[in-house]
Length: 337
Image (tube, rainbow, N blue to C red; front, top):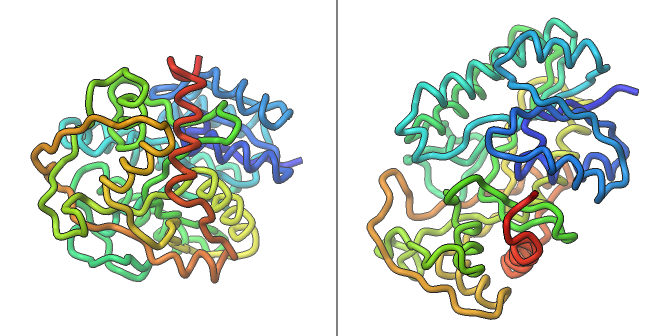
């Protein structure tokens, strides 16, 4: 039986998507260099699903190793998560981001072409909407970026569009995520970043568990209901389900299709903190600090297209996302081991 290759499949979104793919009868092969994840995640995916997973500790920039994976497996389609993803770090290390994210994708596409594999679901981002569009974001808006990480997503989308122009059999779904949070309801999988988290909810979780002293809220003078930044938070399992829909869509349709995956509504930083306090039953100490460079006030999706094209919509509310996140944090005080 042909398989789905999942690059970056031991990461936060990748691992939850692997669970969803296996639960829907797909066979998968995971490729990950474990730069921001752990191999123990594979055992947890197997434990949740009761299914065996083929795993390769391979960097997508390694042409020979990636070619070997394709030789050893009948790969029908790819879900491409692998990439460096911290905005601030990308500003400090642009070369590393461009090399890893863009060169790695070029190697992947080259190996796919050589093996006549023409379906890919790409892990894009709402950052491609840049600074000049107004929320809610729709897929037909012009793309741009404000940092090297964002530009890697814009450029990879362009590369994938060009591939579709050059080969009309090529099928691409670019999923533009908003802000994934939450965890698998079993508590076996969740967001487990190396070092101090870059994202809001894992940071709150570490404050709630006593690992960090307090939460820094970057700016409270934005033009929003309470002055803090507003984002479209989406449960990672809703997001994972969106990938299963995207693979099914790519099997039936050719060409390039960008699709937002979000809830269609925004929550402010303070609203998320309040929901997390409810979830964990304790106050979250916080302090207001300076705005971060490049942050915008409001960012949320118009999620109409995902419903029309995939029949998909997000189900979980912000409290449920926080409850699942806290459950994972409680059960895994030292992360995935």
